[in-house]
Image (tube, rainbow, N blue to C red; front, side, top):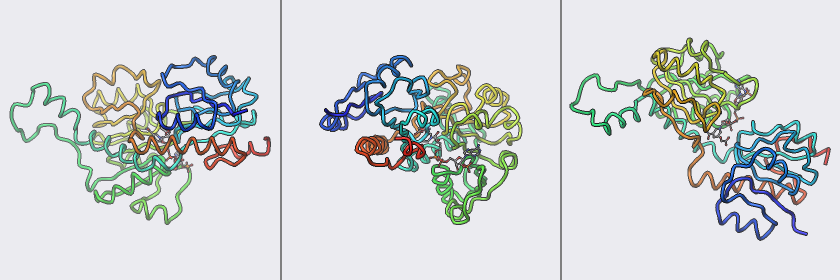
Length: 327
Ligand code: NAP
Ligand code: GLV
């Protein structure tokens, strides 16, 4: 009997066709939103599932999943998966690291530059017919070149962002829980390790690239925003919930920081409506890794993990190696 897999969200049609040659596939190409109960029910009937950050995989979702061997997230972030619950249930969990580093770093830069140089605000101004003449003080922004970039979460993507700053002659400071090895700091434009408060006070542009967890929830709230320079920008390409959105809205409205670039939001896609009325924030709908080549690489990476799990191999991106002893 062929093994059965669930594709909880749509995938590239040619990849679906390939999977159908190897597995019995239940796919969701029409992209219906499964209720938690429906997802849990579907997981009882498959050997592996391909998920995204939108599917919550917790103890309740896995409760009846006796035959499920692996949950393969098509995302590097895995805060949607309760890793301990998966391990307890003897289910492998995997993600898609590295293949999206450069594309997501590009997006971080795009947002940071757009926020600093008021790109979308300028475009809205122009489209609204408000551009009547050149003025010395029209839409003045902040320079990127020669400024200080502060990265909170200097991992794979954070380091790719820091490397790009060499071309802009920027100083880089960063904060993690653990300092990087000297050779990694050197490659990341000689990044200097600092405390979070020092970073927030010194950076001209703050970039968030850390994972979401109960510990990182509201890493940036009212107190942290108050430490930032009034001319500074904040870019969040990490996860909704790392920033307290209500506090950020207040800071942007009162111009306590200059601007923000946001790809992720609390309760996305239902973002706080007050963002929409602010001109000093650039908003994108969680498209950090959304280049055609990278989304394909992520899908292939997730499927390689799944095939490994279903053929008795250790998936290359196994998040819970402790599960191996339980299988
Ligand atoms: P990574 O290599 O694991 O890097 C994460 C970094 O965050 C590490 O350097 C880690 O260092 C640091 N960190 C973790 N907890 C921290 C804390 N409490 N305080 C300060 N730093 C902390 O992950 P990555 O591949 O770069 O991805 C990072 C995140 O980006 C993902 O988890 C995902 O949520 C997000 N992402 C978003 C998009 C998008 O579409 N917008 C795309 C890709 C990724 P320490 O462990 O030493 O603290
Ligand atoms: C996207 O947000 C990811 O974590 O890959």
